[in-house]
Image (cartoon, rainbow, N blue to C red; front, side, top):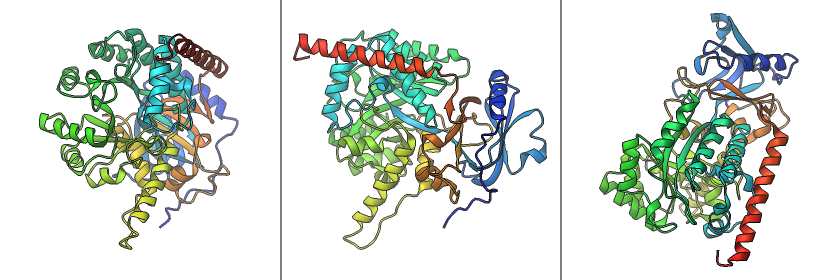
Length: 486
């Protein structure tokens, strides 16, 4: 069944008034009484109670969505509002990336054909990570965050596991603040090499410092590994780290959850009372049925990284969406590492959609019964509402619900890759890409407009990224030359 839009014939809103509108929006960005009215869009609220509006309006007041409905103009919503003609577009919540190692931004696609986790660890965490200075942390994290915003990701959980000093951590948090993204600094100590051992004692300071943007847009979580196998016991989740997170009021994201060892860890956490909705497990590939039972029964969240699991080959290389759904868990989605993977949510949605449906058909061949297949609506839900719940921000973002923060996208439906608009969800998931992300609002502030990031000096960004990358490569090569075992 196609969900046909009843909107008027589409046209991209690129009229001469747009520069003036942007100027007005910039000048009034700090005004809590400033109102923006988007009119004439197809609106995918991702709120089950509100559903989809084939043609509708959305009102933003300050940093908050205050109304969604058909023809709000007729109810006086346009009074004193900046009116944005959104006809020919689809409005959606901003995407939520539930796990990315943003500090690696300047190393994008440096190992595009890495074959396994060991290859990633050796190149990135053993050889290059120790070369990072605080300024490199800033450059990589800000670059990754800006790339996320450009592709429509409004919330980014940065699993920052190269915080060698307090200054490294501060630089990573500042980069999130300066990028404009809704950022979550998930702090963890480095896997390998020398560092100050300031983590996890530094978490309380970071949590207090990150709120200095005055809007609560950047927050903190604790990050850890599932087991001791990769980096030893200090980084492994357990009662000590759970107690620290609880005392600081922080959620926890646990990376590298896969296989038999992680399955045993999940069951141990169940006995210790450490599972629950404030805990998110990342990857969750190759887990046992008993581990999934414990996860589902406790309300523990799951973050899938579809391209990472499949392309790098984590455990069985199959994103665990069927296992999560069978356990009653609707997962969030994530990017993971840009050193080898795409950095946008469109790719994650399409990859998961294709792999799960392939698996459903192939798995049912023996019985001649096709197993249940997920839909484009499902993966868009994973990328928005479920992602927000996974990182503990479900009350703040993830749907276009009045009262939530104005984190939203205006996606063009009249570009050659999308026209004509027949099914809005299908268009967003299967047709759109970063070029169609025309406008991005985060906490009511315009971060992308008419297809371009706002207030970003691109030539300077290019120069900083290249200089940082060159420093890291030179330092890593020199260190290897001095000590071939390094």
